Image (cartoon, rainbow, N blue to C red; front, side, top):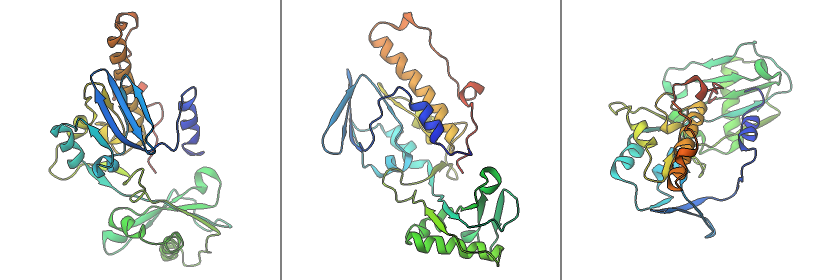
Length: 269
């Protein structure tokens, strides 16, 4: 994704009523519709809803569901693993590293093993992105952005001792960001992979999507995209059925494994 995700988001958002700055606090399911309340008390009503809340936010229970989610849904939320991987973007005045895709950091323990993604190879910009994961990523989030960038540069110096310091930096905080509280899902040891399907399963007029609901592509943007298409189609069919118009339109059959579902293999990097 040379130009990032923005062109994808803008294309998918065309013609839609997008409301930014509306953090959800309550989702109330009724037999004849759904009420969604946001901070400030404003409520939106609809026949059905597609829930794409990040797994970390679901785990935090900061959004109240009424009635409460069933036990099998809560089990899926609880038992799917949630990882943290951050990006520390370092912009340099010139390119001084080899023309490779990755620069790996090798260490005695897995704690500090990480890598740099070379954006210059794909974009032409003199940028390296440090990608710490796991406990290291969580510990770095406790630092200031300046300290985090300094740490990333110190890791680069271990690979390239003559590296010149960055002129700009940008640091993500996926683990502590209130809108994500984590980066991506993964299978916990000993837990069933079926948990992803449980998380995706609808509850009456609530339909679920997102990378953590993808059986085939968990932890990826194309997993989120494909489950979003499936949930949207299931929601559409539910609304048509309610108003007695189901026989007027042919259903669009989506399967996650279908090539139609994944026109772009989007890396979460």
